[in-house]
Image (cartoon, rainbow, N blue to C red; front, side, top):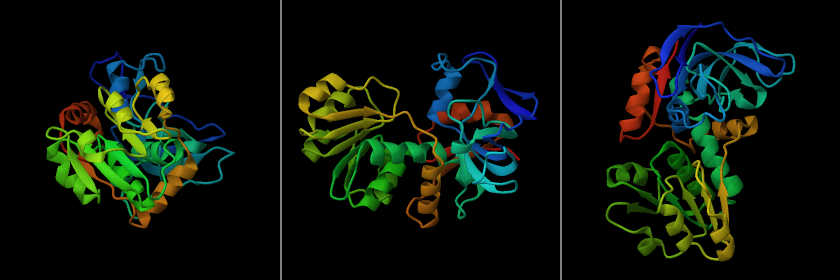
Amino acid sequence: MKAMRLNAWGQPLQAEQIDRPEPGSDEVLVQVRAASINPFDTWVHAGYMQQLFSVPLTLGTDFAGEVVKVGAEIEHVKAGDAVYGLVPMHPGSFAEYVVAKASEVALKPKTLDYVQAAAVPLASLAGCQSLLTLGEAKAGDRILIIGAAGAVGGCTIQLAKELGATVYAVDVPERGDFIRSLGVDRFIDAKAERFEDVVGTVDLVEDYVGGDYIQRSLAVLPDGGRYVTSLILPTPYEEADRRGIKASGLATQARTDHLNDMAERIDRGILKVFVNRTFPLEEAQAAIAYTMQSRGVGKVVLTVS
C-alpha cells in the first residue's frame, strides 16, 4: 500500500510502498478515504515526540474510511461499515490503510462525508474531554476559551453553549466573525483587549495557547475555579493549589463511546464541522506546510482514495 513516511525527524515526508497491515484480535483494518492534519502530527514530524516514536514511521492520526477486516474480538463495527477514528499513539493514517484498536474507531456521523468526518476525531475528543471530563463544565458556568478559533476551541465553544454556559472566546481579530458565528456571548480581540478587563472572574478556563496565558488565566479564577489545557505544557499545579484552583492538562484518550457521542451530536446539528482545504495524499508535506502557516479556520484534510 502507499503511505507517507517520515524517515528522519523534520525531513519531508516520502511516498513509499509498504506492506498492508493485518489487524490483531482487538483491531480493525480500515481503507482510508480521508485523513486530517492535527498539531500533534506536526509535533511528531518536527521530532518533538521522539520519546514516544521512532523513525521510519507513517505519519497521521485522524482518519475516515471503510472497514475491510475486523479481529475476532471486535463487535461494534463490521466489514463494509463507514467509520472514523484516531490512532494517536501509533502510526499512521496518512496511508491507504490503517489498523486501529477497538477504542479508536466508531461508525462515522451519517450526515458527513469522509472528508468532513476525518476532520472530527482528535479535535472533538480533546474538546469533549477537556470541557466535560476535566473541566466539569455545567449549565450556568462562565467559561473563558483561549485560542477559540482552532479545531479544539471551536468544538469546545459549541459544546459549552449546548450545556447552557456563558462563553467568552479569545483569539485574533481576523477570526472574530467565525467565532461569533458559533454563538459565543463575547468575543475578545487578543490584540486589542485584555480578557481580564472583560470577564472579571470565570468558573473555568480552557487554554489552548499557553505561554503567558497560563498565569493570566489563574488571575481570573476564584477559589474552586478550574483551569484546563489540551496542550503539552507544564501545568501550574503548585500555584493553582495555593489559590484553590483545580489545574489539569489533557492527554486525549481514544474512546469509542466519546466518538459515538460526537457523531450523535453532529447528526443532530449540535456540532458543526469545518474544513479549510484538501490535498491529495501524495501532497502531505505541502499540506503540513500549509497547516503551519494558514491563518484560516477549519481542518486541512488529505484525500486518500
